Image 1: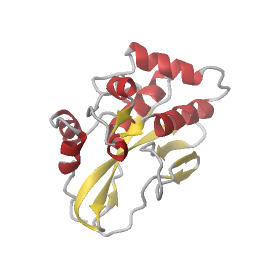
Image 2: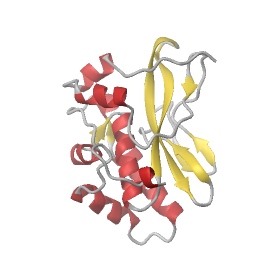
Image 3: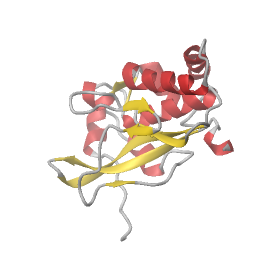
Image 4: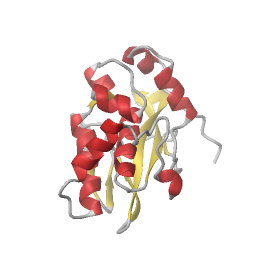
Length: 193
């Protein structure tokens, strides 16, 4: 589990503000499950999704997301992983490949998390932020993600990554505005099945 507890460039839980926020969320909690739920609720409800709110700047590292209070789903997943890891709860990054609009190509990645809960094992959570038509929740062992897989070319990617995919980092660090990111959302090619 060591990689899923590590502080790194993008999941920088050693940052004083991130570790302080993690400690604040854990204060008074009586179980690992309660801490994980509080971290999830904070990122889902208190950090605004960059595109939903059209908020700049583009953020990537957990500390940036916390400082600016905004991030795309990928960046929000970096913050959630950092808060969980700071509290000693293993957390990784997961991705879905989804259509962008109109239920047809093009496709893009959607970022979410997996948390290791002693009672349940790996459990996927999606803190992108709720809105009409999106109702993600923390309700283990049942998953309640933001987006279901509906089309043939869409997919739940099975991996749990300790670090963000390079294509995601590139999208968040090479584009100046949230509109630029939206026009260049990251994607991966699926292997033939």
